[in-house]
Amino acid sequence: MPFVHELSITAREVGNKAVVYLTGAMDHDYEKQFAAALDQPIADGASLTVVSLADLHFADTTLLSCLLFAQRQYRAADVPLVLAGPSKDFVRRIFEVTGTEHWFTFAPTVEAALNGDSEDNGAG
Image (cartoon, rainbow, N blue to C red; front, side, top):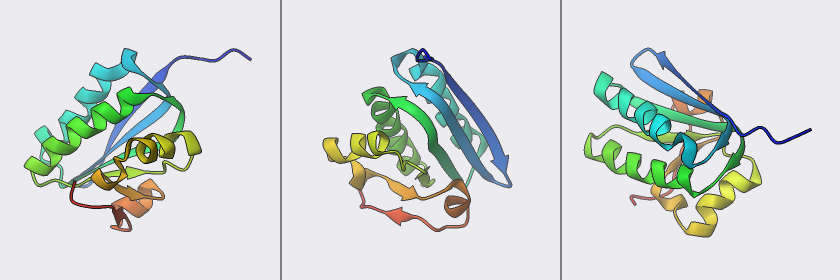
């Protein structure tokens, strides 16, 4: 089966919280769409944004770049940004290899993140 190079970005509101789901392959072709999806919750006044990484089957450093930029914006707006489900080794390794895991808060699932069950890895 050939590798499908597509990314689906789906946003959902849960009360005053936002969830951004990434499904597929995240690379530079989707940088602008992902950045826009991360900007929208702050513009809408969300109290928390969760990014689901559980359904990614490919990601390059574009994912990290977008998330680092967004994290700065979220911290400036005093809105938590939580990464949920980066359980696949290649996704978690992007953060470990680059030494950026301390910049983010992680949760095992979207539901856990929405319920406040997350691991803050540092102040960044």
